[in-house]
Length: 382
Image (tube, rainbow, N blue to C red; front, side, top):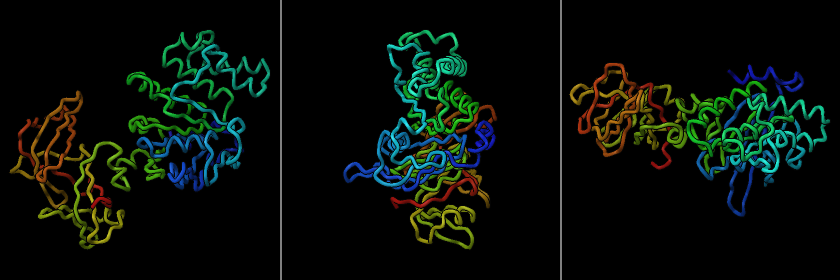
């Protein structure tokens, strides 16, 4: 479901207006910029994930949106109102933490009711909304239980219900599934995604798990060194990374480094005596000058393995020689770890069941890829 279709649950006066706008957001800790000039606009009903390695600034950004951490510079607008200096309890924001943060002396229902009590809601409204929230997370019969009587997954659902029971304008989640085992985490990913869509909620979600981000998000903001390196849909980040960092961070990549040489509308990546063709579309997109340090990024599933004497190269393909180091069976796929002619590692993934040859460690092969399947990016280490 697209972000556009999810806005139908929003009141008419809020549709079309950004739910969240960050402009020039910065946070300094001494001389260190934890967040360094972040600009971001989030649409109503959109699910946006802040993704990046530890220390990249994603959690600090989330805490500034919530009001728990004050910004050094920049502005935070929520539903068209500047909240830069508004305390957390007046920002109309729901927050879900990794450690659940449930009150141990309260039942599940009492935990969910707490935000409504703090807002001085009527008792009849509290009773109705708590029942609705419990039904939403499919825990109708668990309202009387204390947190210690609930599993980790059930506690996380109660934390979710508590965060949405007062119908906040913005729902913030800080690695809420990080403490759960893999199977439960994957199940709750879909549950959280479906419930947020059902509510038409605007969600800002923080994680370092790229698969989680790809599954749940309408858009993903890749953070690096306090800045957003790239913002877009999962398929855009995977198929069209704008930098070597994004290409290396999202999914697995095969990276060939060299110097870029322009040739008419297209060009070549050149290293020693090897030359690999670059498409005109990639040259235009990368906007690199001749002689620039550059890299070609090829995803493991885009590579085809052939015998060393049958390169399989045509006018629209490139090739490089390699040897198989390991062949790993992964159920529906087989993953090959290879060593290329220059000693660098390469990876190939092949779907099983297609009748393709199975290669063994020690086999010499040619790696072939279509020119259009490789992405050209600048190489800052070149």
